[in-house]
Each structure stands twice: as structure tokens, then as C-alpha cells.
Length: 123
View 1 (cartoon, rainbow, N blue to C red):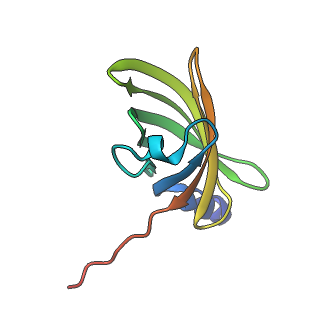
View 2 (tube, rainbow, N blue to C red; view 1 turned 90 degrees about the horizontal axis):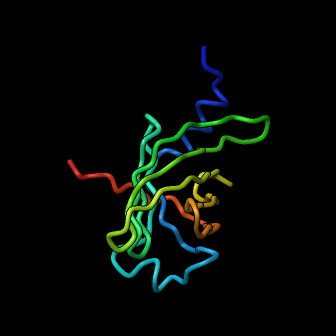
């Protein structure tokens, strides 16, 4: 049986997060095509986009004594060039998270993100 605390921590990471700050690129670049984001699904798949960079992610949720981290690899493109790499993300609370994206053979950037609110539909 899964630990309730572990399930709650994993649930905190699932959803769409707006990337609000990156250590290597300014917000004008990050948001030039769409609001920069990272999406994590319950099954460990996801996607992200910032600037001209898009990626599909595959990862796993890792639990330590203090936190739950989503550890992932990705493949994607940057202005039509194939890219790949890895990274991680952890929630700092229910609405904020931090992480890092690392490109194989290239750049790496830390990021801060805020959980995108889910708008409930009127029935």
C-alpha cells in the first residue's frame, strides 16, 4: 500500500507549471512563443516549452525523507535542431517549484515555476 504522504507529494507535482524565471535566459526569450511551461502527468510523461525550445519528457517520482522530486530525461528541438537532456523538479510548496534542465553536451539552467490554476467550468 502506498504511503499517503508520498502520494500527496507526487500529486503536488502533477499539472502544468508556468516557468517564471530561468538562470540562463530572460523572460522575454522564455515567453516569446507561449507562456513558458512544464507539464507533468501522473504516468511520468510530460512536456515543456520555453523560447524556441520544446521537449517531451519521461521521468519518475523519487521520494526522500523531506521531499518528492520528478527526475526526467527529454528529447525535443531547438529551432529545428534535435536536442536531448535531463533534469529535475521539486515542489517548494503547493504553488511553487524549482528545478534544473540540462542539455546533453550544452547549457543547463535552473528555473522557478508557479502552478497554473485550474479554472472550473460552469455547469
